[in-house]
Length: 205
Image 1: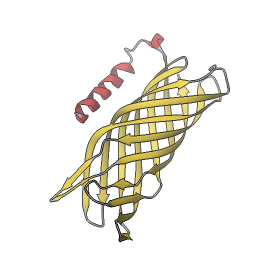
Image 2: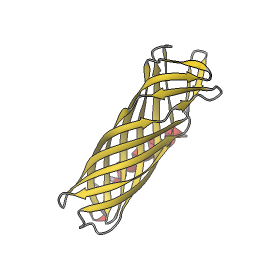
Image 3: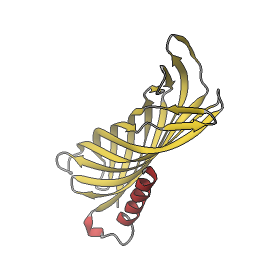
């Protein structure tokens, strides 16, 4: 199901932003964002163990259409967080060497409050799509990935620099279906969610 949805999102983005799309339908734009990714501890299903993560980094590229106060876009995102430690019940914390990475493809919708002529504009957003989640534990030599459904919501501010350039600062909450990892005789299912603080630039054409 995840792969079919990913293919559908890619095809939709290609159709929406192709040269054949009606230029009068909206104002096209592109955006780049980057920031800190605070991945929540992942509980390992079926056990009392948790994986703690170091703070990571996130990057996104988006291409979309703006219709006044509303805009829609396709967004490709990536974040990576290194392991900090493994907590297992009453056992002492163990250092872990590895990381978890998330490559996402989302369809987002934004709403900007107030007049677009304002210098500062409150923004809210929501998105849904798919995420390829990969885990690599060098301590146990475990390496696997899974494709799952994902979604995010966000809120922030836009700072209009000119008629075509807007700077943004956003808080985003990202979550995904529990990915299932399997290698040899080891099966592992994690819960995934992340608090991300992002800054970026949006350029209208």
